[in-house]
Image 1 (cartoon, rainbow, N blue to C red):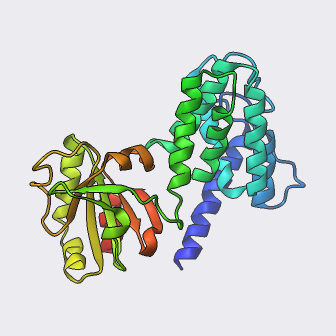
Image 2: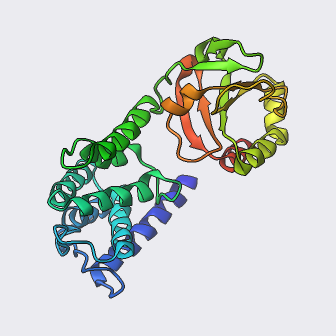
Length: 291
């Protein structure tokens, strides 16, 4: 039944988007494409719109209104979820190639992609889709070195933290100052890695997570092991306020290696350091284990 409901919701949302595109409602920044009647399936209609979305927008000219462009960009990627993967990737490549003629515009496309696919403001998260934008920016020699390095660093972090693949075996500093590899503290138990930094948000997140009765029971039953990782320099007493049932560590290497979108966050890690999921907020994690 849940699958049926999800399918119905997806159909309603996609139909709404298609209607918006086809009606060419005046609030859109420019006229969106209209799928022809020969496109008889949801996928074929979304494919057509992805392929032709920017036909009525000259990306070579300066972007006059950043907010309008971001709105259009988010409308554009909404169709990705229902389109063919190869069509989506080709469409992204075409857009980035056209934007290369105007460097400021190219940077704005990159920023729109970050806001819509990567940052906490994302419409939806998709490493596979975002990587296409980041790769084009990281390899574009017309951009400044620091800009290319910025996107290259993102690519490195994303590629090193792929779900269903092993995480990099970083070094952790224990509360007593000793050092161990992540693999040395992992076992057959599912590991919840709680990453945090200085600041109010991290303090609140730690308090909410440590007070969760369901997580406490799972720890006591040996179902999960919580490894907290402070993303800063080691200092004596850094773990004094952390729950004693957790393995409390710190690691500057994690900050330089792993893919973080917002802090605090959780990674769920299985046997052999295989990453099951990443960048889960404390609230999302609490909701997940409560079900």
